[in-house]
Figure 1 (cartoon, rainbow, N blue to C red):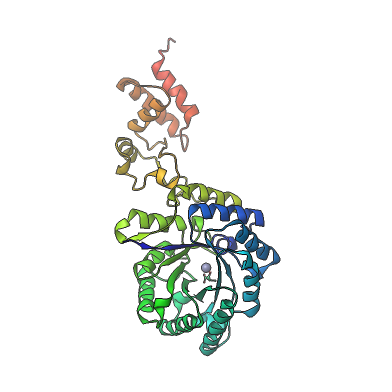
Figure 2: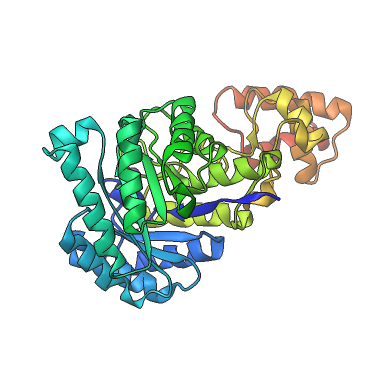
Length: 387
Ligand code: KIV
Ligand code: ZN
Protein backbone atom coordinates (compact mmCIF):
# COMPACT_ATOMS: atom_id res chain seq x y z
CA UNK A 1 0.00 0.00 0.00
CA UNK A 2 1.20 3.50 -0.80
CA UNK A 3 2.53 5.56 2.13
CA UNK A 4 0.44 8.62 2.89
CA UNK A 5 2.57 11.80 2.90
CA UNK A 6 1.27 14.68 4.99
CA UNK A 7 1.21 18.00 3.16
CA UNK A 8 2.07 20.85 5.54
CA UNK A 9 1.38 24.12 3.77
CA UNK A 10 3.30 27.16 4.99
CA UNK A 11 2.21 29.65 2.30
CA UNK A 12 0.63 31.84 5.00
CA UNK A 13 3.75 31.82 7.21
CA UNK A 14 7.06 31.15 5.37
CA UNK A 15 5.44 32.18 2.07
CA UNK A 16 4.19 35.42 3.53
CA UNK A 17 7.74 36.31 4.59
CA UNK A 18 8.43 37.37 0.98
CA UNK A 19 9.04 41.12 0.94
CA UNK A 20 5.90 42.92 -0.22
CA UNK A 21 3.66 39.87 0.09
CA UNK A 22 1.98 40.69 3.35
CA UNK A 23 -1.62 39.52 3.49
CA UNK A 24 -4.41 40.97 5.57
CA UNK A 25 -6.73 38.75 7.61
CA UNK A 26 -9.52 38.36 5.00
CA UNK A 27 -6.91 37.46 2.37
CA UNK A 28 -5.34 34.87 4.69
CA UNK A 29 -8.75 33.39 5.40
CA UNK A 30 -9.62 33.22 1.70
CA UNK A 31 -6.36 31.39 0.94
CA UNK A 32 -6.81 29.08 3.95
CA UNK A 33 -10.28 28.07 2.72
CA UNK A 34 -8.80 27.35 -0.72
CA UNK A 35 -6.04 25.27 0.90
CA UNK A 36 -8.63 23.30 2.84
CA UNK A 37 -10.49 22.56 -0.42
CA UNK A 38 -7.19 21.61 -2.02
CA UNK A 39 -6.80 18.96 0.68
CA UNK A 40 -3.69 19.99 2.63
CA UNK A 41 -3.25 18.27 5.99
CA UNK A 42 -1.74 21.18 7.93
CA UNK A 43 -1.97 24.93 7.42
CA UNK A 44 0.75 26.96 9.10
CA UNK A 45 -1.32 30.11 9.49
CA UNK A 46 1.30 32.45 10.91
CA UNK A 47 3.64 33.46 13.72
CA UNK A 48 1.16 34.72 16.34
CA UNK A 49 3.63 36.58 18.58
CA UNK A 50 5.08 38.52 15.63
CA UNK A 51 2.27 41.10 15.49
CA UNK A 52 -1.29 41.65 16.73
CA UNK A 53 -2.41 41.39 13.12
CA UNK A 54 -0.85 37.94 12.71
CA UNK A 55 -2.35 36.79 16.02
CA UNK A 56 -5.80 37.78 14.75
CA UNK A 57 -5.17 36.20 11.36
CA UNK A 58 -4.21 32.86 12.93
CA UNK A 59 -7.37 32.98 15.05
CA UNK A 60 -9.52 33.86 12.04
CA UNK A 61 -8.04 31.01 9.99
CA UNK A 62 -8.59 28.60 12.89
CA UNK A 63 -12.25 29.65 13.00
CA UNK A 64 -12.80 29.49 9.24
CA UNK A 65 -11.21 26.12 8.57
CA UNK A 66 -12.04 22.85 10.29
CA UNK A 67 -10.52 19.94 8.36
CA UNK A 68 -6.76 20.65 8.32
CA UNK A 69 -4.71 21.09 11.48
CA UNK A 70 -3.97 24.76 12.12
CA UNK A 71 -0.41 25.45 13.13
CA UNK A 72 1.27 28.48 14.68
CA UNK A 73 5.03 29.10 14.65
CA UNK A 74 7.03 30.06 17.74
CA UNK A 75 10.64 30.36 18.77
CA UNK A 76 11.72 28.32 21.79
CA UNK A 77 10.61 31.25 23.91
CA UNK A 78 7.96 31.01 26.60
CA UNK A 79 5.97 34.06 25.58
CA UNK A 80 5.89 33.01 21.89
CA UNK A 81 4.46 29.65 22.91
CA UNK A 82 1.92 31.17 25.29
CA UNK A 83 0.68 33.58 22.61
CA UNK A 84 0.46 30.82 20.01
CA UNK A 85 -1.48 28.64 22.46
CA UNK A 86 -3.89 31.53 22.95
CA UNK A 87 -4.36 32.16 19.20
CA UNK A 88 -4.95 28.46 18.53
CA UNK A 89 -7.52 27.95 21.30
CA UNK A 90 -10.37 28.21 18.80
CA UNK A 91 -8.92 25.65 16.38
CA UNK A 92 -10.61 22.27 16.00
CA UNK A 93 -7.16 20.71 15.53
CA UNK A 94 -4.23 22.81 16.74
CA UNK A 95 -0.47 22.39 16.47
CA UNK A 96 2.31 24.47 17.97
CA UNK A 97 5.49 24.52 15.86
CA UNK A 98 8.38 25.42 18.11
CA UNK A 99 12.11 25.10 17.67
CA UNK A 100 15.62 26.47 17.80
CA UNK A 101 18.84 26.66 15.73
CA UNK A 102 21.08 23.60 15.87
CA UNK A 103 23.95 24.29 13.44
CA UNK A 104 27.24 25.67 14.75
CA UNK A 105 26.53 28.83 12.77
CA UNK A 106 23.23 29.34 14.60
CA UNK A 107 24.30 28.15 18.05
CA UNK A 108 27.54 30.13 18.16
CA UNK A 109 26.81 33.24 16.08
CA UNK A 110 23.06 33.79 16.04
CA UNK A 111 22.02 32.53 19.44
CA UNK A 112 25.45 33.04 21.08
CA UNK A 113 24.92 30.12 23.33
CA UNK A 114 26.15 26.56 23.88
CA UNK A 115 24.96 23.14 22.63
CA UNK A 116 23.97 22.28 26.23
CA UNK A 117 21.70 25.33 26.43
CA UNK A 118 20.11 24.38 23.08
CA UNK A 119 19.20 20.98 24.53
CA UNK A 120 17.76 22.57 27.68
CA UNK A 121 15.71 25.05 25.68
CA UNK A 122 14.43 22.28 23.41
CA UNK A 123 13.08 20.29 26.35
CA UNK A 124 11.57 23.35 28.00
CA UNK A 125 9.90 24.65 24.82
CA UNK A 126 8.33 21.36 23.82
CA UNK A 127 7.12 20.65 27.38
CA UNK A 128 5.61 24.11 27.65
CA UNK A 129 3.93 23.82 24.24
CA UNK A 130 2.46 20.48 25.37
CA UNK A 131 0.67 22.33 28.16
CA UNK A 132 -1.42 24.09 25.48
CA UNK A 133 -1.87 21.49 22.75
CA UNK A 134 -1.35 17.76 22.30
CA UNK A 135 0.14 18.18 18.81
CA UNK A 136 3.63 19.70 19.04
CA UNK A 137 6.08 19.88 16.15
CA UNK A 138 9.73 20.67 16.84
CA UNK A 139 11.95 22.34 14.22
CA UNK A 140 15.73 22.07 14.34
CA UNK A 141 16.61 25.25 12.47
CA UNK A 142 19.48 24.98 9.98
CA UNK A 143 19.49 21.20 10.41
CA UNK A 144 20.78 21.04 6.82
CA UNK A 145 24.18 22.33 7.97
CA UNK A 146 24.13 20.80 11.45
CA UNK A 147 26.21 17.95 12.79
CA UNK A 148 24.09 14.80 12.58
CA UNK A 149 25.08 13.42 15.99
CA UNK A 150 24.17 16.62 17.79
CA UNK A 151 20.97 16.92 15.76
CA UNK A 152 19.99 13.38 16.76
CA UNK A 153 20.54 14.15 20.48
CA UNK A 154 18.38 17.28 20.24
CA UNK A 155 15.61 15.35 18.50
CA UNK A 156 15.68 12.65 21.16
CA UNK A 157 15.15 15.35 23.78
CA UNK A 158 12.25 16.81 21.75
CA UNK A 159 10.62 13.36 21.50
CA UNK A 160 11.04 12.74 25.23
CA UNK A 161 9.38 16.08 25.92
CA UNK A 162 6.42 15.09 23.73
CA UNK A 163 7.06 16.26 20.16
CA UNK A 164 5.38 14.01 17.60
CA UNK A 165 6.61 15.74 14.44
CA UNK A 166 10.30 16.52 13.93
CA UNK A 167 11.02 19.13 11.31
CA UNK A 168 14.46 18.96 9.66
CA UNK A 169 14.79 22.31 7.86
CA UNK A 170 17.42 22.92 5.23
CA UNK A 171 16.99 26.55 6.22
CA UNK A 172 19.63 27.93 3.86
CA UNK A 173 18.91 25.62 0.93
CA UNK A 174 22.46 24.28 1.15
CA UNK A 175 22.05 20.51 0.90
CA UNK A 176 22.33 18.33 -2.16
CA UNK A 177 19.52 15.75 -2.52
CA UNK A 178 21.90 12.92 -1.59
CA UNK A 179 23.09 14.75 1.51
CA UNK A 180 19.61 15.67 2.64
CA UNK A 181 18.31 12.14 1.98
CA UNK A 182 21.26 10.69 3.90
CA UNK A 183 20.56 13.03 6.83
CA UNK A 184 16.94 11.88 7.04
CA UNK A 185 18.06 8.24 6.80
CA UNK A 186 20.61 8.77 9.57
CA UNK A 187 17.98 10.30 11.85
CA UNK A 188 15.44 7.61 11.01
CA UNK A 189 17.98 4.97 11.96
CA UNK A 190 19.73 6.62 14.90
CA UNK A 191 17.29 8.74 16.90
CA UNK A 192 16.04 6.83 19.94
CA UNK A 193 12.26 6.94 20.16
CA UNK A 194 11.82 7.92 16.49
CA UNK A 195 8.90 5.44 16.22
CA UNK A 196 6.86 7.88 18.36
CA UNK A 197 7.27 10.70 15.84
CA UNK A 198 7.36 11.45 12.13
CA UNK A 199 10.15 13.26 10.32
CA UNK A 200 9.25 16.29 8.23
CA UNK A 201 11.13 17.97 5.37
CA UNK A 202 11.35 21.76 5.16
CA UNK A 203 13.58 22.79 2.28
CA UNK A 204 14.54 26.17 0.90
CA UNK A 205 15.39 26.79 -2.72
CA UNK A 206 18.64 28.78 -2.67
CA UNK A 207 20.27 26.32 -5.08
CA UNK A 208 17.04 25.35 -6.85
CA UNK A 209 17.01 22.00 -5.02
CA UNK A 210 14.12 22.38 -2.59
CA UNK A 211 11.78 20.00 -4.40
CA UNK A 212 14.51 17.43 -5.13
CA UNK A 213 15.62 17.54 -1.48
CA UNK A 214 12.06 17.10 -0.19
CA UNK A 215 11.52 14.07 -2.41
CA UNK A 216 14.90 12.65 -1.31
CA UNK A 217 13.68 13.18 2.26
CA UNK A 218 10.54 11.12 1.86
CA UNK A 219 12.46 8.44 -0.01
CA UNK A 220 14.56 8.05 3.13
CA UNK A 221 11.82 7.98 5.73
CA UNK A 222 10.23 11.44 6.12
CA UNK A 223 6.41 11.39 6.10
CA UNK A 224 5.58 15.09 5.93
CA UNK A 225 6.60 17.73 3.39
CA UNK A 226 6.50 21.43 4.30
CA UNK A 227 5.89 23.50 1.22
CA UNK A 228 4.19 26.55 -0.27
CA UNK A 229 1.98 27.26 -3.25
CA UNK A 230 4.11 28.43 -6.20
CA UNK A 231 7.19 27.75 -4.06
CA UNK A 232 7.06 31.24 -2.61
CA UNK A 233 9.05 31.99 0.53
CA UNK A 234 12.12 33.65 2.00
CA UNK A 235 14.85 34.52 -0.54
CA UNK A 236 14.63 31.94 -3.38
CA UNK A 237 11.55 30.40 -1.80
CA UNK A 238 10.40 27.14 -0.27
CA UNK A 239 9.61 23.73 -1.69
CA UNK A 240 6.77 24.02 -4.18
CA UNK A 241 3.65 22.12 -3.12
CA UNK A 242 2.43 21.51 -6.65
CA UNK A 243 5.78 20.09 -7.77
CA UNK A 244 6.04 17.59 -4.89
CA UNK A 245 2.44 16.47 -5.25
CA UNK A 246 2.74 15.91 -8.99
CA UNK A 247 6.09 14.10 -8.65
CA UNK A 248 4.45 11.64 -6.25
CA UNK A 249 1.49 11.27 -8.60
CA UNK A 250 3.45 10.89 -11.83
CA UNK A 251 5.87 8.46 -10.19
CA UNK A 252 3.25 6.38 -8.43
CA UNK A 253 5.73 3.46 -8.52
CA UNK A 254 7.60 5.26 -5.70
CA UNK A 255 4.66 4.33 -3.48
CA UNK A 256 3.56 7.69 -2.02
CA UNK A 257 0.16 9.31 -1.96
CA UNK A 258 -1.28 12.62 -0.70
CA UNK A 259 -4.76 13.95 0.02
CA UNK A 260 -4.45 16.72 -2.58
CA UNK A 261 -7.15 17.32 -5.19
CA UNK A 262 -4.74 18.09 -8.02
CA UNK A 263 -7.46 19.69 -10.18
CA UNK A 264 -7.38 22.64 -7.81
CA UNK A 265 -3.62 23.23 -8.12
CA UNK A 266 -3.87 25.80 -10.88
CA UNK A 267 -6.79 27.81 -9.44
CA UNK A 268 -5.13 27.92 -6.00
CA UNK A 269 -1.84 28.97 -7.58
CA UNK A 270 -3.60 31.84 -9.34
CA UNK A 271 -5.40 32.88 -6.15
CA UNK A 272 -2.14 33.03 -4.18
CA UNK A 273 -0.37 34.89 -6.98
CA UNK A 274 -3.17 37.45 -7.17
CA UNK A 275 -3.54 37.99 -3.40
CA UNK A 276 0.20 38.22 -2.82
CA UNK A 277 0.90 40.26 -5.92
CA UNK A 278 3.64 37.87 -7.06
CA UNK A 279 3.57 36.83 -10.69
CA UNK A 280 4.21 33.12 -11.28
CA UNK A 281 7.25 32.74 -13.58
CA UNK A 282 5.93 31.57 -16.98
CA UNK A 283 8.17 28.49 -17.06
CA UNK A 284 7.23 27.39 -13.52
CA UNK A 285 6.58 23.65 -13.43
CA UNK A 286 2.88 22.65 -13.22
CA UNK A 287 1.38 26.14 -12.76
CA UNK A 288 3.39 28.47 -15.03
CA UNK A 289 1.62 30.00 -18.04
CA UNK A 290 3.92 28.03 -20.36
CA UNK A 291 3.76 24.70 -18.49
CA UNK A 292 1.44 23.34 -21.19
CA UNK A 293 2.33 25.66 -24.10
CA UNK A 294 4.11 24.46 -27.21
CA UNK A 295 5.74 26.86 -29.64
CA UNK A 296 8.31 25.02 -31.75
CA UNK A 297 7.17 23.34 -34.96
CA UNK A 298 8.61 19.94 -34.03
CA UNK A 299 6.85 19.85 -30.66
CA UNK A 300 3.58 21.22 -32.04
CA UNK A 301 3.46 18.59 -34.75
CA UNK A 302 3.91 15.88 -32.08
CA UNK A 303 1.38 17.28 -29.61
CA UNK A 304 -1.26 17.78 -32.32
CA UNK A 305 -0.86 14.11 -33.32
CA UNK A 306 -0.75 12.83 -29.73
CA UNK A 307 -0.58 15.06 -26.66
CA UNK A 308 1.64 12.64 -24.72
CA UNK A 309 4.51 13.03 -27.20
CA UNK A 310 5.57 16.18 -25.36
CA UNK A 311 3.42 16.27 -22.21
CA UNK A 312 3.81 13.96 -19.21
CA UNK A 313 0.86 15.49 -17.36
CA UNK A 314 -2.69 15.87 -18.65
CA UNK A 315 -3.36 19.59 -18.07
CA UNK A 316 -6.91 18.79 -16.91
CA UNK A 317 -5.42 16.90 -13.96
CA UNK A 318 -3.94 20.10 -12.57
CA UNK A 319 -6.87 22.36 -13.43
CA UNK A 320 -5.65 23.72 -16.78
CA UNK A 321 -8.34 23.52 -19.50
CA UNK A 322 -6.10 22.54 -22.39
CA UNK A 323 -2.60 22.60 -23.81
CA UNK A 324 -1.69 25.71 -25.78
CA UNK A 325 -0.32 25.81 -29.29
CA UNK A 326 1.48 29.16 -29.47
CA UNK A 327 2.21 30.49 -32.92
CA UNK A 328 5.67 32.02 -33.31
CA UNK A 329 8.29 32.20 -36.05
CA UNK A 330 9.45 28.76 -34.85
CA UNK A 331 6.04 27.18 -35.51
CA UNK A 332 5.36 24.87 -38.42
CA UNK A 333 2.60 24.21 -40.93
CA UNK A 334 0.88 21.65 -38.71
CA UNK A 335 0.30 24.23 -35.98
CA UNK A 336 -0.90 26.84 -38.46
CA UNK A 337 -3.36 24.39 -40.04
CA UNK A 338 -4.53 23.37 -36.56
CA UNK A 339 -5.19 26.99 -35.57
CA UNK A 340 -6.85 27.72 -38.94
CA UNK A 341 -9.26 24.84 -38.31
CA UNK A 342 -10.04 26.17 -34.82
CA UNK A 343 -10.88 29.51 -36.43
CA UNK A 344 -13.14 27.85 -39.03
CA UNK A 345 -10.77 27.60 -42.03
CA UNK A 346 -10.22 24.17 -43.55
CA UNK A 347 -7.23 25.00 -45.74
CA UNK A 348 -6.12 22.94 -48.73
CA UNK A 349 -2.43 22.13 -49.04
CA UNK A 350 -1.88 25.00 -51.51
CA UNK A 351 -3.82 27.45 -49.36
CA UNK A 352 -1.76 26.38 -46.36
CA UNK A 353 1.48 27.03 -48.27
CA UNK A 354 0.34 30.54 -49.10
CA UNK A 355 -0.89 31.16 -45.56
CA UNK A 356 2.36 29.83 -44.09
CA UNK A 357 4.51 32.20 -46.18
CA UNK A 358 2.41 35.21 -45.08
CA UNK A 359 2.41 33.94 -41.51
CA UNK A 360 6.24 33.76 -41.38
CA UNK A 361 6.46 37.34 -42.65
CA UNK A 362 4.28 38.49 -39.76
CA UNK A 363 5.81 36.10 -37.20
CA UNK A 364 9.36 37.36 -37.78
CA UNK A 365 8.23 40.79 -36.67
CA UNK A 366 6.50 39.77 -33.42
CA UNK A 367 6.86 37.44 -30.44
CA UNK A 368 3.53 35.67 -30.82
CA UNK A 369 1.02 35.76 -33.67
CA UNK A 370 -2.49 36.18 -32.31
CA UNK A 371 -5.97 35.73 -33.71
CA UNK A 372 -6.23 39.31 -35.04
CA UNK A 373 -3.18 38.80 -37.24
CA UNK A 374 -4.17 35.30 -38.30
CA UNK A 375 -7.70 36.07 -39.49
CA UNK A 376 -6.65 38.32 -42.44
CA UNK A 377 -4.01 35.77 -43.43
CA UNK A 378 -6.54 32.91 -43.58
CA UNK A 379 -9.21 35.05 -45.17
CA UNK A 380 -6.68 36.13 -47.82
CA UNK A 381 -6.06 32.50 -48.77
CA UNK A 382 -9.60 31.28 -49.01
CA UNK A 383 -11.08 34.40 -50.64
CA UNK A 384 -9.86 35.01 -54.23
CA UNK A 385 -8.41 38.46 -54.68
CA UNK A 386 -9.19 40.32 -57.95
CA UNK A 387 -6.80 43.18 -58.22
O1 KIV B 1 13.47 27.55 7.27
C1 KIV B 1 13.32 27.33 8.49
O2 KIV B 1 14.21 26.86 9.19
C2 KIV B 1 12.02 27.68 9.06
C3 KIV B 1 11.76 27.27 10.47
C4 KIV B 1 11.32 28.42 11.27
C5 KIV B 1 10.77 26.14 10.49
O3 KIV B 1 11.18 28.24 8.39
ZN1 ZN C 1 11.63 28.05 6.26
